[in-house]
Image (tube, rainbow, N blue to C red):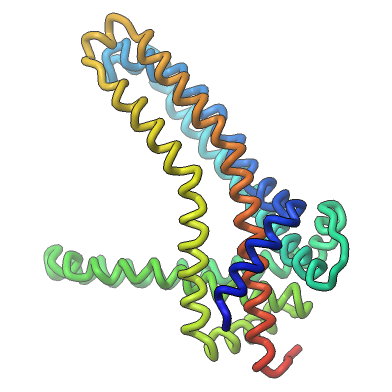
Length: 307
């Protein structure tokens, strides 16, 4: 498998066909919209919190029972946003993959057409994602249960010794991601049912384990390095603003105008980065789906067709 060729084509296609970016942008948009009120909340209430002397007088901002109400509202909004984002992410995965297939056939693409064509695949892809997620979470919970049991009977020593095993969860998650992408491609590119896609994905995955595992690592590194274009400047600016905010509490109690200015500037910087993050999410989704479609086509050549 020529990884360099796959990456170069994925970068070229994902940059050229920016219509595909909309799927990643829309999938990430609900969480971006949820961040805006949190930013305004932080800009407004943080200076007031310090002006009252911290946690001891925090109830002056709200009655004690209001905090629980606000917390419940936040949980409900987060759950709602997660549900909407899950729907949009499934549509985004399908739409990007269908778009890549049409690009390979030199056919025109449009967001409206791809969105409409994605709907027949929705329930199958959602079922696939849920099955894999439940299986992964079950394995993680069993592992954590075993570690907790060992920790109890060894008075904590077993947990300390087993901590390196927890690091295996990261490569395990990446490998499961690769397997799920192969199953996803089987559903969309070969119009398979969920169980047939799982068999096809496992067939390709088990025969080409090291190739798929290496590709997962390379794709992760590629997207991580690309994200540094946004993350590094943002971290530098926020670190500078954070260093300016370390003012003695006595000064904050007397006058919080300086902290207010700092919080407003930080909020503006973060809000300005949200569109950039959405654009990056759109590009990365199209980049990843094109790469996996190419890998699936390559691996399928040596595997017997099944339905």
